[in-house]
Image (tube, rainbow, N blue to C red; front, side, top):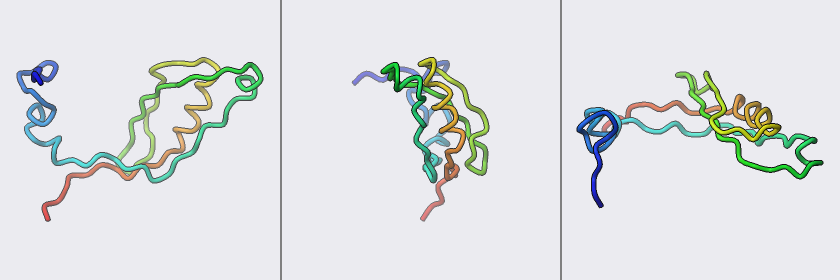
Length: 97
């Protein structure tokens, strides 16, 4: 497998790019999830699809910023409403054992 430099740098991985910091941070863990409520219009019209969202959380694990990256029209609002209520256990540096 050929290593490709991390975008905008000579580093070959996110860990090298961040000076090893990325390797020492845990990913956020999902604490509470709500499934989207399928819109009646979408059900009656037989519409389906995948909405891709970008969510940024605050230090307390609440969604702070949310935007649609790939829209599916009538399905977007249901996806946004569901993700607004998600709760995460915030990421934190791993502590040595």
